[in-house]
Length: 323
Image 1 (cartoon, one colour):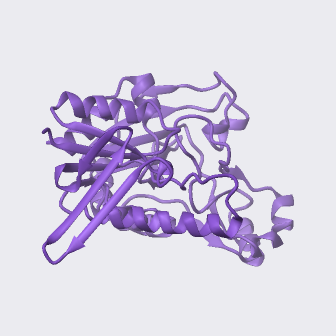
Image 2 (cartoon, rainbow, N blue to C red; image 1 turned 135 degrees about the horizontal axis):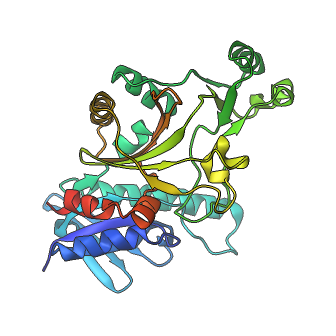
């Protein structure tokens, strides 16, 4: 039987997951898609351990795979379990937490597989402050940043940057290439906002200096290769701070000539520090040509770069999994 490659995602995912599955199959391996939100209602996971060894088994959508058949795994997304609507709320919470614990335990049994990327690396790299610290250590320029639940600290930061400040969440909330129902975009902070900052006591936020830009870059890093797309949102009033808010047709993805060699070298060193094979990197190119690192999302979207620009990212991911 052909080696299996486990593709971990959710039932609402499309395009990117299909492209990687096709690329994996074309390389002679067997792609196994697991929609993690379908466990435990539709997917079956079993882990048997004893002195004689261990056996992990997955059954989903008519396919059965054993852990020893899994050559590699792509951690695209792990999502909250779907539960029956009539479950009592406290029981639902218990079932969700137990299901998540069982899933992570099952995945630990795939310790001999090649991962893009291991959950521990993803969890560490997802910390905004940690990745900014590593970016600075790698020699990348980063914006002045404050994470706080203190209204006083936020007001001091706002004043120190002469009101040129944006705010965003500490963690991303999105599911796939489609519109996110619960996404909170990066936004300019106004004087009124900062006067009403007492609400920070309920939830800390990330504040950053607003960096002037000519274009924004989305850089998909795959095993030391960089695939770069650029977007100019200057024609969009809503999209000038965050291109994802732009009106339809106001900005489009464009090919980019590339980044300076020293910036590329620092980005690769940065990803090596994080221990990530894949990451979606966001950068700003200033009107003066400086490159400013904003963040990296270990599970960030790249489908638009392949769909609109023809960048072979799915092929590179399949190569990294199967080669």
